[in-house]
Image 1 (cartoon, rainbow, N blue to C red):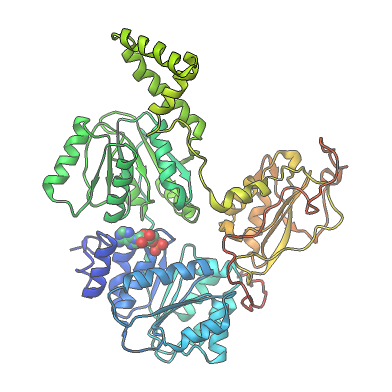
Image 2: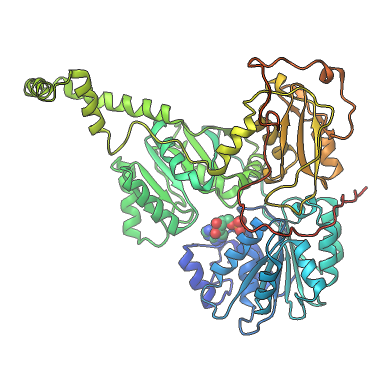
Length: 608
Ligand code: AMP
């Protein structure tokens, strides 16, 4: 049996882990899990090239938990992660996998969290620690985190940690790792410095890379919608409303989400059925048959259950959850565009998964075009026109009694027919309102308004100011940069964030304050950004202008930028005092932020 066909139990995971996986509704290991679990269980070191969304956390958490002793109250597994957000996420994953392991504890530790609280939790002897490098190093130095019982150390998103300037801290922790303990290094990219760390510290590692080349079919139009996890369902409903669809297959990751989404869609009036590996053969066949015959329009499926599914009338594949790898993507979208028909594949991508999207594009050598979530107005238009079609069908029937009833009601209520018609329409649409509420982009909206800088562009100031630290990652040293594109070029903060996030491969959480001026813009970025990234960004063009990025302190600005400021149409002063277009540092989580992690600012050395 090839490793890709193995089930979790074939891989030798303990009963308690298998129970948790069953609770979570995982059907089979993802490719990175198939490749990593066995070598890690055999005690080998691993060098894995994989990004978020591939199931990488399970790939190291499951095998390491398998050999973790819950009766021993001392750190046995240490995971280093670039941000507190990821540290918490990884700790949560450990918790859910270890749900049936009695006496198991995992502790996330990161800067900005109260030291006292961390010390108290550390005293209880959690078996797994997931932390940001600076804070972990801090505790190790104080002697409050001892690695005597450590069996394995994991570096998660090593390239991100490098970008954040954590390389020296990582090296320090690696130098203090007990001899004989395992090391697993995961990184989406392999810059020189990571390769150097790998070759110095990994002991005869198993190399794992899940990137393969696959081709997609031309009869399938591919696009993606960037949407937060929180807004996915709303976005899906809007897409379903406006796309002219026959059969639709919606892919999700787990059995549980499959059932959940089918229920949610049913509740919203869409005839849909789940299709997952735990349904018996008969139930599965019934669902597929109903889809074929047009008795059902939507199937929500997991990868396992949809294998080989061949239904001509599937016009759309919606990847509600991003697939684990390119192969799964190609397989999923291949369910449409069959028998000479045109198909459409829509991929939902959260911000963190954008990198995975680029990988799929590269590996399939195809362009996945951005698509926006249909606005409430467009949805209303569609719903109204569909309602119109339904009403049109009844116009030819016998309406004499209804006409009399209308006259009677107008009389009784003392209203004219327009108002009565509006009231009746209101009643008819109650279950499927014509007007949708706006989507709650929780933080983004507020931030975007500020980012927009609607209160006018600003002229070039004498002083560009200094970089402000990120609210969520106060330990990341920031630097203020200047780029040669401004409001005169009709640039929006979104264009800048998008370009920098994509071209520099920087998570937008690390893009801090942005101030738009008429001809230039300042943007706060991590101070530790490697030189080659800056070199690349210099040449990137946004709104037709080369960014020519440099530190804002270096004031050599071209003639074009130093021309007199554009007059603002409204005139008057900017009363906020902080100027125009502005983006605040990540303010998603304002809780408990005393005493940031102490990390020496440094710029990573460049390898030649
Ligand atoms: P990760 O790449 O580790 O961030 O995982 C991405 C998502 O995939 C998480 O929501 C996991 O819960 C989910 N996931 C991981 N492994 C599996 C699996 N074998 N089957 C289904 N979902 C999974």
